[in-house]
Structures are given as C-alpha cells and as structure tokens.
Length: 192
Image (cartoon, rainbow, N blue to C red):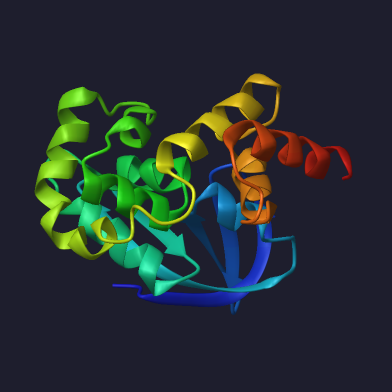
C-alpha cells in the first residue's frame, strides 16, 4: 500500500491532483480545500489511502493525518465508500463534521450527493461514541446551525461552498450574530 507521497504537482483537476514522484505521475483524489491550497509545480506531501477494488486502484490524499484518520473512520460505516467519504469531507471543516456527528446533527451529511437521511443517521449512530470528545465542545463558539446558515446565504449570493467556508474562517470571533457575520463575510469577499 502507498501510505505517503511527496512530489511536484503536474496537473490540477477539480477532483484530483497528479503528483510527479521521481518521474511517475500519481493521480490522487483530494478535497476542494487541498486543491485550492495547491498550485502547479508546487511540492506537496500527502498522506494517502489506497482503495483497491476489482477493476481499479485509487489513491485518496490528505494534507494531515487527522483528515486521513477521519476518512478511514467514515469508511468503517457500511455503505460508505471512498468517494462518499471524500464528499463528506468537502461539506464542512473537519472539526465541524466531528461536532455534528457527535451531537447527532445530520444536516451536513444530508448535503452530500448520494447520502440520504437513513445513511446520515447510520453514520451518526455508528460514529457518535467514537467522536464523544467533540460533543463536549459543541456548545462553544459559533453554533453549527449558524455556520450552516452563513454558508447557505453566501452560496445563494453566488459564492461557492469553498469560498464561503474559507471566508467564514477569516471572520473574527468577536463578531457575533448570523447577520453581522454575513455582513463581515461580504466585506471580506468584496475586498478580494
């Protein structure tokens, strides 16, 4: 199994990177956050998960071992394959997903194409105990519902999910309330 790759990025697609490692190009499926943080010819180091199936051998890459561990945790849920698990990682920041699952909030999971209400509930039931530590911190900071509302508001104004998430990270914690945070997000997006 291939556990880690380090090389130059020679191609960027909306779903994968091609990483040149000593003359061999590896196609590695990654999250949108990873794609936006990379540029052609950058050197990148990715932790990888190798998915072997009857008719394919796919690599899934992650910038951190924490992302990869959560990806593997999702794969332990029956009915969740590598593509679905990667799609879940794209929906929200990792800590937000962990808090949502720990508190039983399926709203983020329902946004993933191919994951219906029953599958989302199954993920919560099977992983809730494993993510118990995040339940204790769920009451601090911006609530997950507020965060989701802000992202949806920005998406309705024509911004992508990724742009909305990145902007949300830049809003100071001192700004409280959904409408105030949306206004601040629009200021940040307008100044680019």
